Amino acid sequence: WQHPEIADYSDTSARAWLFAVARDVIIDERGTT
Image (cartoon, rainbow, N blue to C red; front, top):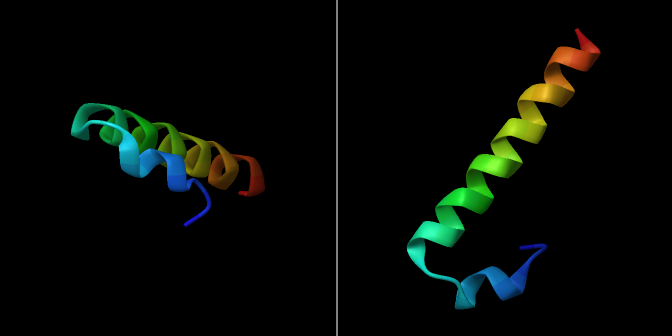
């Protein structure tokens, strides 16, 4: 768990953070293929 502060966020903020991480992963995947 690299961002412990996320635990204090609301579900909406946590969900938005997860979407941001997923987006970055997808971008990384596109960059490597």
